[in-house]
Image (tube, rainbow, N blue to C red):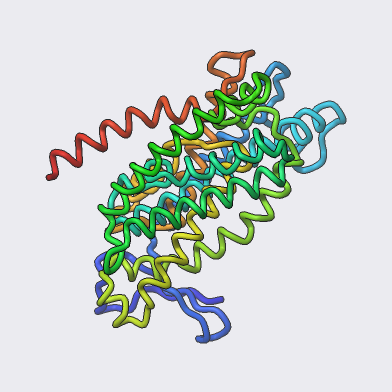
Length: 356
């Protein structure tokens, strides 16, 4: 791999570097500011993760946390840090990245900062699919994961069909999604009311979005699925940016607009459903992460990598607050994200109203 500076005399408006692999066979231009912001966000997210690993009823000094992660700590510290706390913290990072990327996909498709999966109904659809498995079929984790994915995809298909009229417009997709979300939320409430008490209580707690009690049995499957989905999302980042230029411009660049839009829709739903299947519906991270990252990078549109880094930081910080705000009681992380995200949502609505 080689890195060369931006050629003199060519002004892209931002500092750029060209990265080339295998000679000149593969090349890509990197935005220096975007990469710098991503590195800073990831560094802060990792710092929050280390503090989370050190915190709890059994306090562990940060140097011992690092030793435990390197496999050099004594048995008790290794058990507390690696076996008990690390799976939850790792889930916060990777699920936050998945939510950030899912939000970036839907905000790009709708060309609207309100176009996140929790606003336009895909979270509610994934929750519906999971509730059907939990309440009616009494399935295990993998069945719940399959139900959440099926529910999210069916909801996405329904919204796509209802919003389609000579193509899909972002505003129409949002309006239809909000309506479908309201109906599914009512259906979810009805199912909870009809379920047995103990099943309904467990489903309701999970429905708040929680990382409490999650271990290696949840980390392994989620990491394997996201190890496939996240690289696919990064590969789709360039066609996604080309779609933002408009369908005609995208076709001129060789992009099949509707096929690419449908592929992005399925990919965004899969990212969101994976999170819902693992930890329940966690709101507002997908809404806030892409826009916060966009403001830091100063880019014209939302981008996958900064949104993923911001999502990881937001969910890791929210999980730390969920564990420590009312210690020793741990609250669902979804309560924290909804509480903080509600303030952001009101600010975003006021800002959009002033713009229009």
